[in-house]
Image 1 (tube, rainbow over the protein chains, first blue to last red):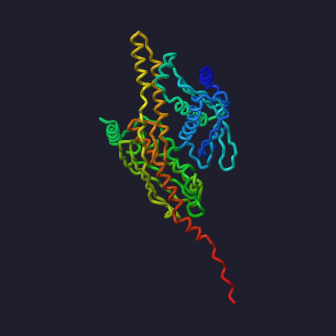
Image 2: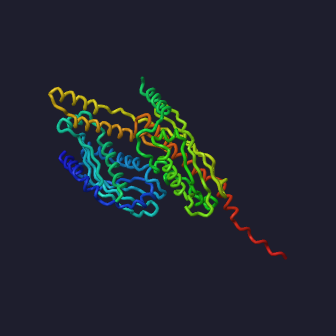
Image 3: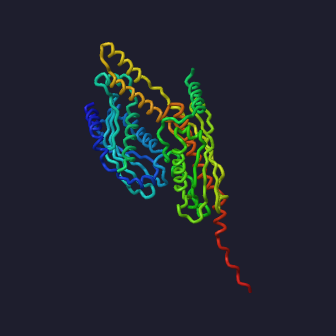
Length: 166
Length: 256
């Protein structure tokens, strides 16, 4: 739980700094591509948690949902002709019924020759119970789809970084 | 009234009374045929790099249905057709000496609500002039099924209202917390709808209002109709015919 609160605090406090990072892909280049595939790897060192059934379940769900959310967010745009693959490397993850947080680097790779065109660093997604202890209690009772919301939030953040003019 | 009947009634009403709605401008990307469609690229022949889009227009009712005036949507539509042709090698350079000039007219959309959402047929009327114009199809069309988003997960909203009532009973105003709970409930619904997947001819509309579903279906139907145009250009007999015509006949054997 502590890890989750720390991750969410960082995710909440840092977006301005993260948004300030320059866009690694020029606008002209972005217009030439379309997202052919989304791959996901997991470099987060989670050896300590792999015997927690809930962690394993959240991780398995998150792996699928993040890929699906990113694929869906980029399905129609950009709308160029050069296929690229989004390679998502998850390097931080924590999840519980009261909230979820993910951080990843996303490399944009040209499919034709495997050339890495750019990397979006420290892309974050999170969902957290709000409204203090009452909010935590409500969320524990209502069990919203924390993984799905986190995946959608991650995809939205990545879209924002991808569309950034500079 | 069952939800599906209410949806059909709402969609019919929206189709019949379509007026400019407050909606974001239609991005050209949403109507563009990207490489994702895996249509064949232009081969050497009369069409490769020769098509110049001179105009793209919509029936007035279509512009209303898309939520904006024709003057705002038509440039997006023209840009989308040009980008689609460019992606597959058909678009002519602006200074091409002998282009095929193409105009695109989108007929009034055909709207058929069903219990799950709405079907929209988009039909493009294509008029081409110039050498090789007979290789360009005269119509392209597609049917798209937009699904209404499900709103099944309302426990969070119920909890938010219980929070309002409970805290109001002790004289407190819990409004910020309530809005956050509502936001979580909506995000939960969106996440559930993301699980329903998408195909080339069907997906879930992100906007659940009847006008939003119609608009989403119409934009997607227009995109798939453009994909039909690109696929027809690739399948046409003309490129092959031209290639054959280009082959220089072998020299006649010398007479003995």
